[in-house]
Amino acid sequence: HYRLLGRSGLRVSPLALGTMTFAAGDWGSTDEEAARMVDIYVERGGNFIDTADFYGQMGGSETLPGRLVHGQRERLAISTKYSLTTRPGDPNAAGNSRKNMVRSVEDSLRRMQTDYIDLLYLHMWDFRTPVDEILRAFDDLVRAGKVLYIGLSDTPAWQASRMQAIAELRGWTQFCALQISYSLLERTVEREMIPMAREMGLGVCPWSPLGGGVLSGKYSQADLTATGTPGQLGSRKAINAATGRLNEHSLAVAALVGEIAREIGKTPAQGALAWTLRDPAATAPGPGARTPA
Image (cartoon, rainbow, N blue to C red):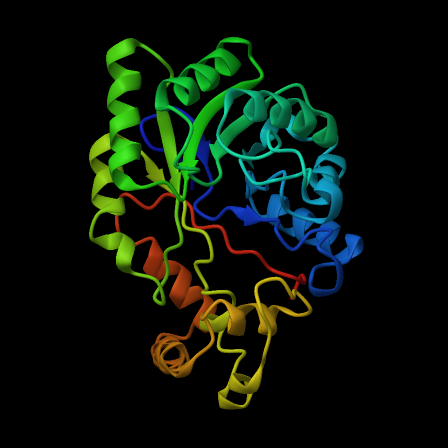
């Protein structure tokens, strides 16, 4: 059971494997746990692995999957991203510029031990780089064979639709994927982003479809005392508290998800993931687990 990614011929499984927990230190997976998760995912037909140059320590979220998929690279579609800073203090090692894109791709290819990237996302809009620079840089990398497909992540709808129209009119490579935060805890994208994606031929790949794990039902009222700031990543609970995912409202939503899941004989996580796929524009949510369990 595979789906076409947006207006492209790339077939991907309806659940991507998020790897932000790989090589993430105290709050992430061990290398052994990551290896087992990749094995389970591929054994069950999964072929869509999502990572980024910013994830993990020293790019470890690219290095580890690159090592784990050795020998079965061709059957997998691997997506990665560029934009977030990877060398603090270097003003050109961040943002959407051609310089950062080309450098990031070369570094990603080296870390993942591969000759090409199946899907390259612009990770986050920087509000500075001209769109023609971004589009031409993407197109040049596709023409060079280093990138096969391109996508956008966390980009304003008006810029995404504008760039897609420009690419189509100028005969440049068009985007086929849009990665956005979408779950029962984050529905604002239903107003503009998802309708835009459906109209412009972008397959939606929701990140954090379980709301940082809150929708799995593993948190309770007792967890509301968790503290932390975005710069203190000591635990996933602290991250969720600091980013606003863990609160009275989200726990109430998670409780209702749990009730419905029990009625239909499924787990809360299964129910929450299935919900994100109800819109035809949604192609492959990418949950990021910490352990095989």
